[in-house]
Image (cartoon, rainbow, N blue to C red; front, side, top):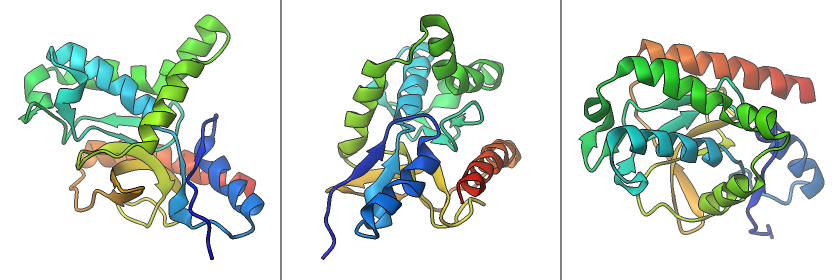
Length: 201
């Protein structure tokens, strides 16, 4: 009989560590769906910046996605995001800010904090871990999980993707159409994740 705890990795290169180490420690006693790593910290940082630009509350925003690795290759994606039901890209209406400020700022925020303070933001990471373990009541969030091979992400790769959480489990957001920009950004972070995974094998 399998145990039912949820394992979450909060660390640099968390995605690959979470399955390369936890499964070895668990000796096969865990279901892959019980293991995830935090990209919620990056999701929360993106929400804060978007809410500031849209002059709305963080809780008004839904369908934001942070794809990929917890690294400078991650991709904060507002394509599907809404604020109080209105497309966020229309509310902010600044594609240059999105591509040249939001995406790189979210991707490098953790690095910038470490460089400035000499340490990561432990409180923010802890809050993100708590957020990740809570349900989303039908709303989207970003979670790095062992993926099932959609959106060009190799099956079995731990990657930040859009999910909804309820009753201690998650369901992937499926059927999204990715445009050329999204695909190019996703390809960069997938390449990095595959390299990390292969380096651990």
